[in-house]
Image (tube, rainbow, N blue to C red; front, side, top):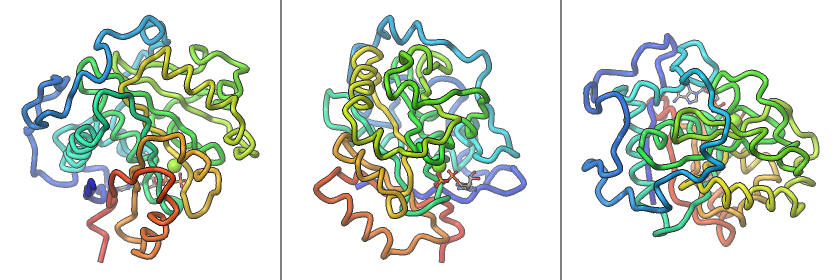
Length: 278
Ligand SMILES: Nc1ncnc2c1ncn2[C@@H]1O[C@H](COP(=O)(O)OP(=O)(O)OP(=O)(O)O)[C@@H](O)[C@H]1O
Ligand SMILES: [Mg+2]
């Protein structure tokens, strides 16, 4: 079971501390990073499939944005909070079932615990591994947040892609060579109907086949507040639970574990804003 502590970010936007500065040089992380033993197996063919290469590519790189609603701390790899995501990345990759593509759900017990923050930062951390393809999908359909996290306007309605009305290549795009994003700027009122139907899963299976991501991170609504999350669980390989160190109770975590049991393996718990905890 993965256990990761992510500290609370300084509200002024400064660094959360100095430990770890210089631990990782800027730029890409090779697949054979010695800090992550045995963690970068050749999950899929390292050369990207044509469909991946053809995805539209965002011109600018994501930036940290101290005033952003969700801070992309992983853009500053030497920040201690970013190092927490690097550790999470290493643990996650080690826990993946060998030689297969994985769909990982990122879920919080209640709103505002930081599931979007964790999805975005973990995706950025994974995207620094060369020749490892990460797809991050915003399936918090009632309350999408990933587009804002990446500060991307005009992301469009993900529902159009999920219903098959628009082909994935019209909606998805890439940031750099190794990260693709499925964002949403229009909340979906009746998300459970969409999630219960086969059409959405056919589309997602098709994406898996054509784009061949090594890992797909799916940001979902809070498990204890939104029934749609339950519908996704049978379709994922594992769950990362993001708890709020200041507000989530052990009872809520236990209730999440109960709801996950028999539905999806709980790979780990991220204790977010750990410094605010008791
Ligand atoms: N470790 C942290 N330090 C400081 N701020 C944080 C931290 N984690 C999350 N936040 C902030 O808390 C707010 C809520 O985070 P986020 O949007 O990721 O929560 P969520 O679980 O996705 O919420 P929702 O239920 O709306 O989907 C955001 O403004 C985010 O930037
Ligand atoms: Mg969110």
